[in-house]
Amino acid sequence: MAIQNYSMQKKVKYFEWSYAFIAVLTILAYLLNPGISNSEAKKPILWLHPDFPPIYIVKGPGAGSGLGDKVSKYIFKNLPDYRHTQKVSNFKRIIKTISAGKNVCSMVLLKNSDREKVVAYSEQILASPQNAIITSKRLLPLFSPLSNSHGAISLKELLQQSDLILGYSLGRSYSSEVDKTIRKYANSKNSVVTSGVNIFEGVMKMLKFRRIDYTIGYAYEGEYMARHLGFKEEIISIPLQEHPSLVPVYVGCPKTEWGYTILAKLNPIILSLRLNPDFYGIYKEWMDSSAWVRYENMITEHFKPKTAQ
Picture (cartoon, rainbow, N blue to C red):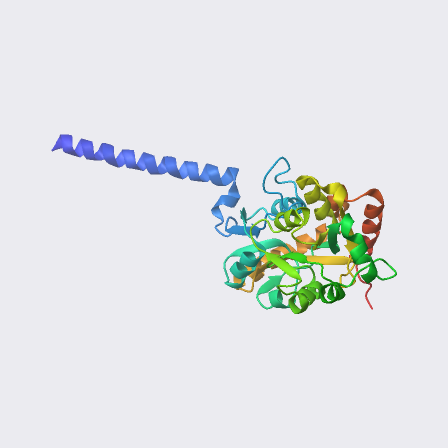
């Protein structure tokens, strides 16, 4: 019996020491990294984005160095209390997932009337240079008759009055007015629609191999992709009459309590970043020097604080 009592006492002391040791480790972990005890602090955010060079560069030597990749790094750094993960998806799937109320957000979304019904938007985070018609230089004479005195072309007239074929990406927004024009005037005779995770490379390949006559995109992404595909010297961009000079870009989350909570945390960060030259300077490497000067003048005016009345 004495032996049993001694054995039992040893077990009790062993467990006491074990619990004490665990308690000490827990306290040390808290002191070294106090945030880990806060369950709210480490809740995850899943960020969905497309394979969309040079906005998001998913593969190759420049992987992770796209415009959207850089925006993401700024946001993640300034929102350290969440665990950020990313997943590649096309725009149609992104909007569908957000509209379903899943705990996901997307970093660089444009607004249009359909999206606004299902997506909660942040303050404007960026002002992107405008989309343009991207086509082959050999086809320029076919576009010239439709251009105005400023060299811009109406997409509406182009879809109605020419035999040229537009290639565009399913689910992508090009700006509210351009989206409306495509929905109303694009059809199986004057356009080809593509889908897939890589939303721009596909249409640019079609342009290279003459399956379409033009597409719509940012001039800098057209140049990037044409260089990637080996026909940079063959393309040209033409301004669109329906497109504003700067395109507002936003973070989008679901219209849920979770989504609005994330946006409430993001908005002060966005307001502090968007006039920072280092932040909007992510566009600089994709523009020639004169285009950059014009853009920087526009961006500072665009985001200039409004004077109180």
